[in-house]
Length: 261
Image (cartoon, rainbow, N blue to C red; front, side, top):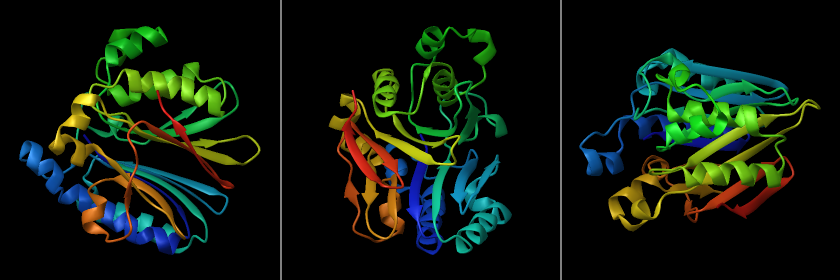
């Protein structure tokens, strides 16, 4: 399972969160309590939408071992007055190791919008393949996260509230552990919107160790952020837990909270 961060606001305000994200991938006590492993070292990546440009970066190196890549992100943030950031550090569970399965994934749809997608958790990959009418052999070495984002590219008609709830609720129903996601949609008029989900199964929710590890937390202020729980250990702030089964539809004009499922 992975560590994720969604943040929007001034780049100088996001930078400390990006550094906490890096530290959370290097030293995760919540993961260590469950498995004895404390790192998320199977690659990392980000998407940064800033001042009319977009930067998408993925590396098979761990974020805390990729000094050049992380410094590049910091430099972009310091130059940004208004940014939207998605970033992901992978601890693999399904799919091959290597650059291909590093997130966020990028897709351009036939319906006139593009998106970047990241996910934390485990899904029923075979069921996704069946629902999307994919060939299983084609996706043999891909992660479950890739399979679901490919499903979205095929099935999502438009990135509007009802459609998003329909397909992401389906994703939650296929969760084996969690369905924590963040998606950034780029629209043909130059606008953007994001959709974030916080979901874990009942078995995870009832287990203290799993719940502490899997929950998402939220920070509101000059910078709005949603992050994996470990960031609260590396960036002291007024974090709040996001209720399980919550979706957030985020636009430049505001945030709408919706029930998922």
